Length: 121
Image (tube, rainbow, N blue to C red; front, side, top):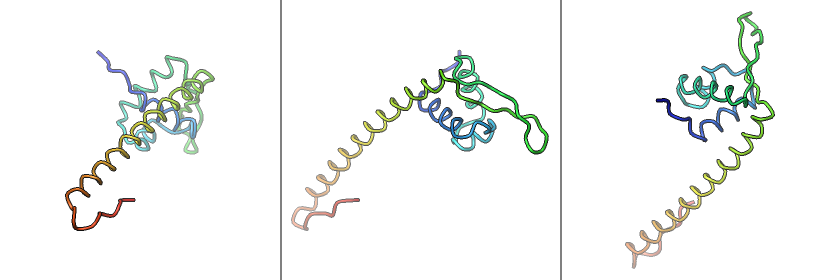
């Protein structure tokens, strides 16, 4: 059984390819900090869904390489992924802010009588 690639990974792959379609799979893996196998699996899935088109180009050292170009369908999918990614990150940010405030209050309660602790920036 194959496991689905999570939305964050697909978003990051599509975003990187949109910025530089000539990235090799190895360069993409290194840039994103994920394994080459995950990049390969993700690209195959994106191609199968019609969201990425693979084209050939010749690199300066005359080796045949590939360009991974987002299709119009891929651009729409990336926009949806961007919206979802941003929602998740904003929720994580709000949760972190609440946790930091709670910890600062907790720390303030523990140091009662010693002056209020400075807020972290």
